[in-house]
Figure 1 (tube, rainbow, N blue to C red):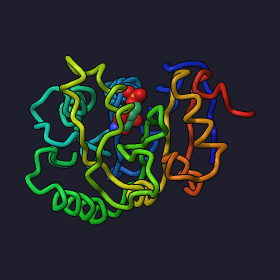
Figure 2: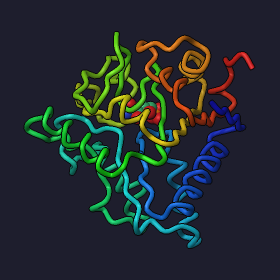
Figure 3: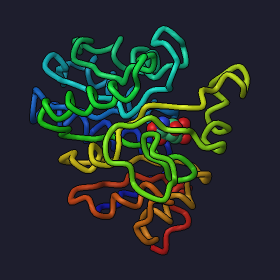
Length: 243
Ligand code: GLP
């Protein structure tokens, strides 16, 4: 496990974008695992800058997003598909046909989960997975539970996650109560993982993830078992670590 401590959100975003840009340059047909939430927005902006400087090419890149709200259509502004289009895909030369997000409107969510897993597997698994973290240490939408979920699955969101994500919706009632999320098998099969965290509200989740026991009640703690994981933390997110 590698820990990179940086001063603030901007530095975190630059460091992460640099790693992603290197991956895309070294392997032009890379498979990227992408995350949503406010944390990676700065990273995506930096990637767009690097792309505009003509230093990277997304023509042959494939992406898989971690998750999508259940029962939200992709046209809904709060859908993660919409988020990805607005914050990244619309600004780079990626072929949208090669960008995958679980279908939140799938009539049969179980079938959709299986379909998504087989797509990821067929692509040879993810080369570089980008993760944020919830304040309860969830990754993707793998919420604290008594066991780690393996494959893509339908999740009942925890109240704290609904509350945290309510800031993106007009009212708390509008926040979906369920989501489709990749499981830990998908995430752990990624060849390289980077987890980004910024802000004091992530400090405890980061401490438990890195220094606590591996425990499904702290979903991100499973990353301790990943052979190539890098945490990029700003001062506040790293503030409770022992060293
Ligand atoms: C959502 C997403 C996660 C993300 C988390 C934290 O629940 N499913 O992938 O890491 O929010 O979001 P933020 O970066 O806005 O704090």
